[in-house]
Structures are given as structure tokens and as C-alpha cells.
Image (cartoon, rainbow, N blue to C red; front, side, top):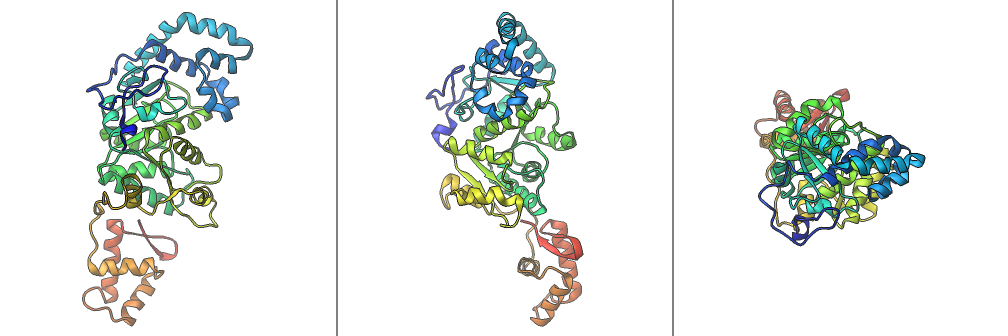
Length: 398
């Protein structure tokens, strides 16, 4: 990352200071009252923000009184008085709930608050962190890359997202995503497979799994990474919460990569915010006939970096050839198995076609007989290099 990306030290409610060296530890137990009062206010106004979620970004840029006035209607005056009178009390309640939930806090008054996040027009007042605030700061220094995309992903998209997470994690980069079904979960899973660090940015409380079906993945992430949210424990997940968290994913990341996304995917919002921050955006090409690729192909047409694998991301961040992707963590194929991979990638995707190719071309040595082909296909499938699908057809897993 550049010096700008790794600077530390925003003042409360202000902009990034010019300090480059981070402090040794954040004030994890000491998020200030004003910032915690903002967290409480977002919880209070959650339902009132829902009807105006299309304007959530500019609304979150407002200060507390302005936000209340914008969404509270006839209750605005009473809520403003209540907020002013009980701000310190509410902050204490928020602090205690976070402590009870095992969450650590970093507010934007803290010199340790990530400057990459403070560059947002509306940086979150408080980061609620499961897995350790110090760990979050360490992961933030490992050139974070956001990998995002549709929940309704194709198998190809899931494979690519997992491969990107695996490759970037093996290269020592942090992967940031939203723990959602589809692309997000695949990216986290791939990163963990390479023993890499990953950050899950949640729309609800950092200590509560969302979606609930990803409980095991959430636990796996917290073993080496963190889950982060700007809302406090027990907060309900609103539809505006997803839009709000997209800006955090972009803000925490040095680069954003969209794997699969439809024309109205929230992943495109993440990419837009990253571009507005002046950070590179990449996209994985998809079939022009696929609705899942409409958004990603549009990003590419607009100038996004073509991402075919981890090396393209490393080149975009550090310059071509400056850093080389590490070898795949999967067991390397034998020469005979590598030949099968090339043939499957070239369209000979059934046992019959592969056996015929071996016979017609008189493949030399071991691996030429039909029974050898079957053994090698089984080994490749076990190692995760290929997948057998409908009709017994094989595809190469990135």
C-alpha cells in the first residue's frame, strides 16, 4: 500500500492527520462518548432510515442533530432533546453491551483508527470488532483486497472467488468481504484454505452471524481474522445496513475486485466507492449472455482492471512483476495429470473423449491407458483441480 493508504491518526469527526506510524495499541476500551452516542443513535433511527435507504450515503454524512431532523419528522425536536440529555448515559450503555458481547472498539477519535477508512465521506463513528482490534489493525497493514459479488453466484464465480482468496491469502494479503452467501463466502473460504487473514464486514452486530447459515465460517474467520461492524450488539439488520456496510468494505481495502454482479448488484456500489476514493477496481470477465456478468462486464468496459487470477491483483497493486503469486496450495499435478487438465480446459470434458484422445494421439508413458486416465481424473478431483458435473462432464477449477 502507499503511504497515504497506511497513514494513521484521524481526529474525531475530522480528517486524516499526516502521521504514518501507527500506535502500538488502539484505545480499545475507551471509545469516546460522542462516537458511542452516534452508534446508539443509528440503532434508534434504524427503522426511520429504511424508507430513505436510497439516500443512505448522504444521510450518514450528517451530524447527529441533522440526521435526526432529516428522518424523524414530527418527532425530531423530542428526539434531539433526548439525545442531547442522555448522550453520555447511552454511550455508557453501548460500551457495556460491547464489552459483554466480547467486542473491542475503535472510535474515530482514536489515533489507531484506520486512515483508509477515515477517507470515506461518512466514516463510521465506532468500529465494533470481534477477534481483536489489534488484529484488525495488523490485517489492515497487509494490503487488503475486497472480493465481492452476487449472492446468486454460478459455480464458476464461486470457484474464481475462492481461487482469488486462496492466491491472495497465500501471497500475504488480507481479503475483505461481507460474509454473504455466494461470492463473499467463497472468498473468505479460499483465504482460510491458504491460512490467510480475512476481514468480514457485517451488516449487523459483529458478534452475531449473518447469515446464520455461515456460523461455521464466521468461527473460522475469527480464529485468524476479524468481523467488523459499525453498529452495536443486538442491532437489527435493515436493508440500508447492507448499503452502509458496502462503503466500509471499500474503505478498508486498497483494491476492490468484483467477481460476478448483476446490473443492480450491491457489489457495484462497493466498486463505485472504491473508485471515488481513488483506489483500483478490478473485475472478472464473464459470458456476455449471463445476467450475473452484466455488472462486471460493464466495469471492464468502463476501464476496470481485468482480473483472471491473483497475479493480476498483485500487478495492479504493486506493478507488473514486482510481486509474484505463490504456487498453488493444492498438490501439484503430475505431467500426465497436467496433460489431462489442458485437454479438459480445451473442451474434452468427458471420460470417453479423454480416453479417445489418449488412444488417437498415442500418449506416451504412464497415463495413456483408459484405466490410467480414470486414476488421474480421480486424483485431480480429490486434489481440487477439477469438478465433475452434470452428464459426467469435467470442468477445471481455477
